[in-house]
Length: 87
Image (cartoon, rainbow, N blue to C red; front, side, top):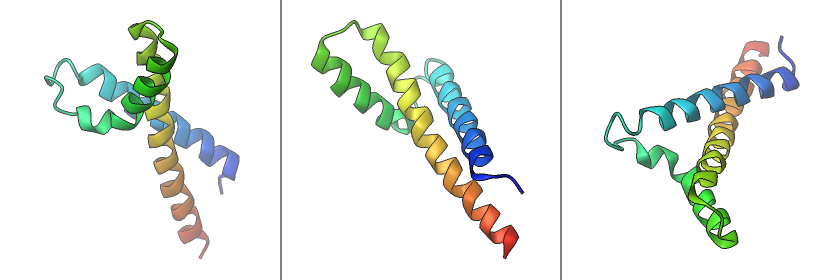
Protein backbone atom coordinates (compact mmCIF):
# COMPACT_ATOMS: atom_id res chain seq x y z
CA UNK A 1 0.00 0.00 0.00
CA UNK A 2 1.35 3.43 -0.91
CA UNK A 3 1.88 5.79 1.98
CA UNK A 4 0.40 9.27 2.23
CA UNK A 5 3.75 10.75 1.18
CA UNK A 6 3.86 8.54 -1.90
CA UNK A 7 0.27 9.45 -2.80
CA UNK A 8 1.11 13.14 -2.40
CA UNK A 9 4.14 12.90 -4.68
CA UNK A 10 2.16 10.97 -7.30
CA UNK A 11 -0.67 13.51 -7.08
CA UNK A 12 1.70 16.46 -7.50
CA UNK A 13 3.29 14.83 -10.55
CA UNK A 14 -0.17 14.24 -12.04
CA UNK A 15 -1.09 17.86 -11.34
CA UNK A 16 2.12 19.13 -12.95
CA UNK A 17 1.54 17.00 -16.04
CA UNK A 18 -2.08 18.12 -16.42
CA UNK A 19 -1.12 21.76 -15.95
CA UNK A 20 1.75 21.49 -18.45
CA UNK A 21 -0.51 19.77 -20.97
CA UNK A 22 -3.15 22.49 -20.64
CA UNK A 23 -0.52 25.20 -21.00
CA UNK A 24 0.97 23.54 -24.08
CA UNK A 25 -2.29 22.93 -25.96
CA UNK A 26 -3.83 26.37 -25.38
CA UNK A 27 -2.41 28.00 -28.51
CA UNK A 28 -3.18 24.88 -30.56
CA UNK A 29 -6.85 24.79 -29.52
CA UNK A 30 -7.42 28.53 -29.87
CA UNK A 31 -7.76 28.83 -26.09
CA UNK A 32 -10.75 26.48 -25.92
CA UNK A 33 -9.62 25.02 -22.56
CA UNK A 34 -8.84 28.35 -20.90
CA UNK A 35 -11.58 27.83 -18.32
CA UNK A 36 -9.63 24.85 -16.92
CA UNK A 37 -6.75 27.17 -16.07
CA UNK A 38 -8.75 29.87 -14.27
CA UNK A 39 -7.42 29.13 -10.75
CA UNK A 40 -3.82 29.59 -11.82
CA UNK A 41 -4.52 32.52 -14.09
CA UNK A 42 -6.49 34.29 -11.37
CA UNK A 43 -3.71 33.89 -8.81
CA UNK A 44 -1.07 35.01 -11.32
CA UNK A 45 -3.18 38.04 -12.23
CA UNK A 46 -3.78 39.14 -8.66
CA UNK A 47 -0.33 38.30 -7.29
CA UNK A 48 1.84 39.42 -10.15
CA UNK A 49 -0.42 42.34 -11.02
CA UNK A 50 -0.16 43.59 -7.45
CA UNK A 51 3.65 43.64 -7.48
CA UNK A 52 3.83 45.02 -11.02
CA UNK A 53 6.23 42.48 -12.47
CA UNK A 54 6.69 41.45 -16.08
CA UNK A 55 3.98 39.35 -17.69
CA UNK A 56 6.18 36.38 -18.57
CA UNK A 57 6.75 35.65 -14.87
CA UNK A 58 2.99 35.21 -14.45
CA UNK A 59 3.08 32.11 -16.67
CA UNK A 60 5.16 30.02 -14.23
CA UNK A 61 3.02 31.26 -11.34
CA UNK A 62 -0.09 30.20 -13.24
CA UNK A 63 1.43 26.81 -14.05
CA UNK A 64 2.44 26.11 -10.43
CA UNK A 65 -0.93 27.10 -8.99
CA UNK A 66 -2.82 25.04 -11.58
CA UNK A 67 -0.51 22.10 -10.86
CA UNK A 68 -1.27 22.40 -7.14
CA UNK A 69 -5.03 22.61 -7.77
CA UNK A 70 -5.03 19.54 -10.04
CA UNK A 71 -2.59 17.79 -7.68
CA UNK A 72 -4.99 18.33 -4.79
CA UNK A 73 -7.79 16.76 -6.80
CA UNK A 74 -5.58 13.81 -7.72
CA UNK A 75 -4.54 13.42 -4.06
CA UNK A 76 -8.18 13.23 -2.98
CA UNK A 77 -8.91 10.60 -5.63
CA UNK A 78 -5.83 8.55 -4.67
CA UNK A 79 -6.71 8.77 -0.97
CA UNK A 80 -10.30 7.63 -1.59
CA UNK A 81 -9.04 4.72 -3.70
CA UNK A 82 -6.62 3.75 -0.92
CA UNK A 83 -9.41 3.78 1.67
CA UNK A 84 -11.70 1.75 -0.59
CA UNK A 85 -8.97 -0.83 -1.20
CA UNK A 86 -8.37 -1.25 2.51
CA UNK A 87 -12.06 -1.65 3.32
